Length: 412
Image (cartoon, rainbow, N blue to C red; front, side, top):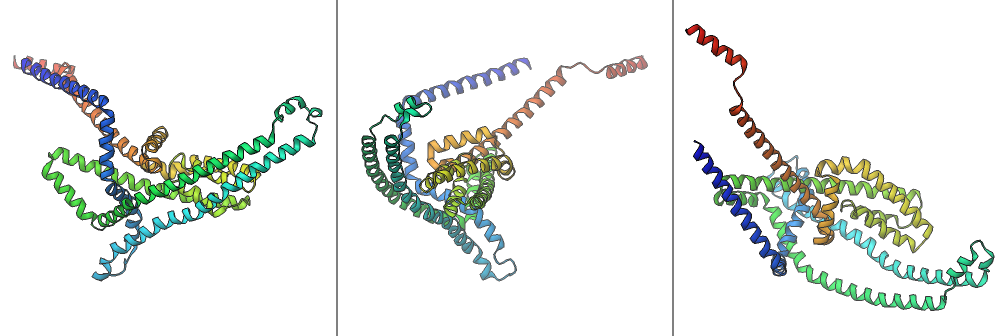
């Protein structure tokens, strides 16, 4: 028995050594050719980008589509009407999602473009006022007059000309950037159209696609790997569904509270800024701060004092939302510690921009769930093995030993 057990240990150790050595060699090769590998991955992603966009759109649209489909034609059994449930649900869900984003873009982009020249003019007016203040008021007579005189010892005309030149330069760069952005958007329009068509097809036949994927895995993969792959897919689907539902609810709540508060405080641009704050709140952790910065930038073009009021109001609102609303609405759905949420947003943003921030959190949540399940399974297995080992090593109980002795005495 002992030689066989030692042979098994030697074989297992040999497999571990070979596996670790192979992994080290692969890591070294990958690190040596990192540029080539990244280029190949980028080309593959670019090749499949329309399908990737389609999958992302399908995952997002599936949440409102499923809810709408459950509520359509609930009191009829007519086959014709029942066949129309899925197409109508897809159309209504597509119109709802794209309509919201188009409405926010129509509200925000024109006002943001108009705010840029207003801020430039405000900055130039501020310089003129500072120059007038310096020429009309003897600064040496004021408290800390020497420091103020040194501070205001500036050629304001030269400063104004320099700022004008900078604004002209950056306005030209801004136009070039805008034209480049329009070109990239036009280039990505084909991917979006193809992805939308693919998402509609996949949503219309989602049960059939799920059945085909299940059959392929059962036919071509070992049963254990097939079952685990299906479990991984179900965890990802459930996590994304819960995250989209909860994050959308939280964004609606935050946008509504922002609108009510801005109306009470009599701040400008209420519909536009509240819609912007609600949409940017779809990105966890930092989304609301992005909305706050853009909103403050736009109010600054109208009234600097109201900008301060707006920033204070949004910071207080975000504290209330982060401590009271977010844990109850979103926290239970993603089951991810705050540290990993921030890490997922950071890594996702560096990889895929705003879309990467949005997708990073549910992806990290699903991976966190799978790692937690695997860890718990491993701990249970180790506990069972240690329990069996203790049972083999431990001596018999004293009661059992006494019973055996009394039985031997009776037999004698």
